Length: 239
Image 1 (cartoon, rainbow, N blue to C red):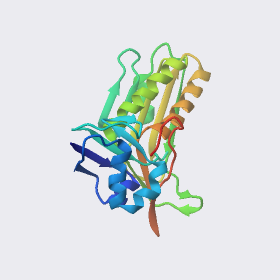
Image 2 (image 1 turned 120 degrees about the vertical axis):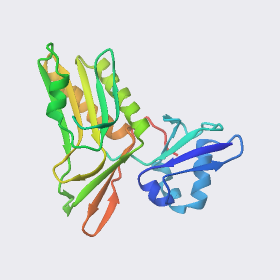
Image 3 (image 1 turned 30 degrees about the horizontal axis):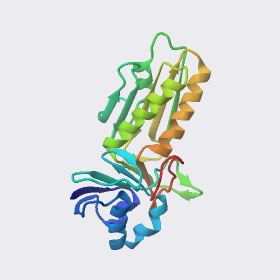
Image 4 (image 1 turned 180 degrees about the horizontal axis):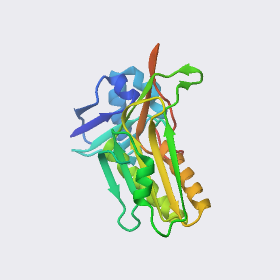
């Protein structure tokens, strides 16, 4: 059977490739697929316990049997507007909005566009690029992601939050590519008739996004570069 394999973040550096096709015998699991590549690239083995797997754009158990034609992504821990959206989704019932872009994000304009008459408050959280990491001067950042899966996961998170909190709608926006110091990388906007649920929903949104959405951050310094190591949500199984 033939499997399409995708590599992201530091795993792409380890293997020197973004994607490839591999022919395997029937009965191979997701963990077995990882073993196949770990035998070729020893650096992968050291990362095993922090890697999770997506099969056809859905998180899956390492013991899952693969089938011919599957797309399997090997995923390291995620790092935790008005521009042209690369991918976007809107929940018809609530009007929740999710977007990925390579353009600067105008969060204020996005909030005003989504604001409704029933809303008495909206909380706009913006994550911005800072100029250092533990005192080490940062020059700029680059974000990459598994785009098709990322937008679906953002929508799942946002729709769950809308159902769990008394808010009217939520927006989750993320920028990709190179970002300079002070630029906005991620935006969570929660709308509600009252302020407290909006604060709580926005906090829940960014916390879940940073542990569930397959987006990775690379920091560039004057003396080197590094993928930022994050962590998966505890509910996800790694290899």
